[in-house]
Image 1 (cartoon, rainbow, N blue to C red):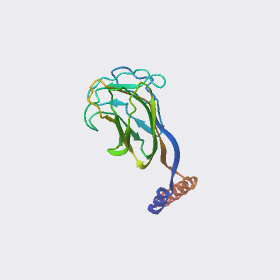
Image 2 (image 1 turned 45 degrees about the vertical axis):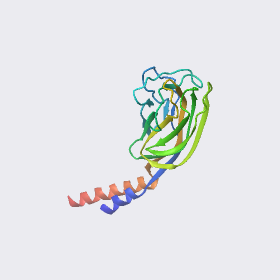
Image 3 (image 1 turned 120 degrees about the vertical axis):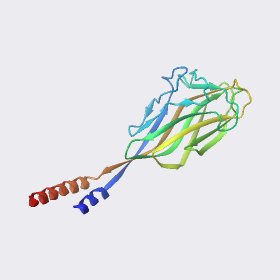
Image 4 (image 1 turned 180 degrees about the vertical axis):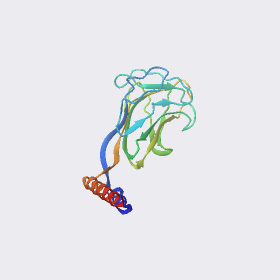
Amino acid sequence: MKSILTLIVACGVISQCHAQLVTYDFESGVDGSAAPASYVDGDLSTSDFAINAGRSITYPAGNPGQAISATGWTGNEGDKYMEFTLSANAGVTFDIVQLSFDYRSTGSGPTQWSISINGSSAGSGSFTTDSNYHSTLLDLSTFSGLTSANVRLNGFGTTFGGGRLSVDNFNLDGLTFVQVPEPSTWALMGGGLVLLAARLRRRR
């Protein structure tokens, strides 16, 4: 009987699905509070999009609608950031393939950005500091087999505490992998249950 159960477990397969993993468009954001996701894949869950260091969160005009925003970006890389954590449901793993966001950094706002996922660098660059929104897109290939991902957008490179950074349309695309049984596995399970029932009857 043990060998039958072993075969049943071994016959599971991985179902792969290319997916939009999570999106924050900040349309439901309320001043003073972190923002919930506007979309998250059904095999995942996610935290609110937050800003660290006890700074006030506001939601000014975005690209379009509204964006999440804060001032106080002085300090070194990693001191000030926006973040959220994406988690997989039981039996699920995921890969992050692409990351994108829109931003507007004022003339006295942060001049540099970096992205980290679970503490590892995912990319970096320079903010264009003017009154317009700009788009950033990162193609990623090294973040795979994840059950959770803490995603941080660091802003730095200014000495002006009043400088403002606004972020909109923060999006992760990727793959989800779900352990599911093949049709033949269901048949094997059924056969195994029949054999088990027959053995139990003989013992009686």
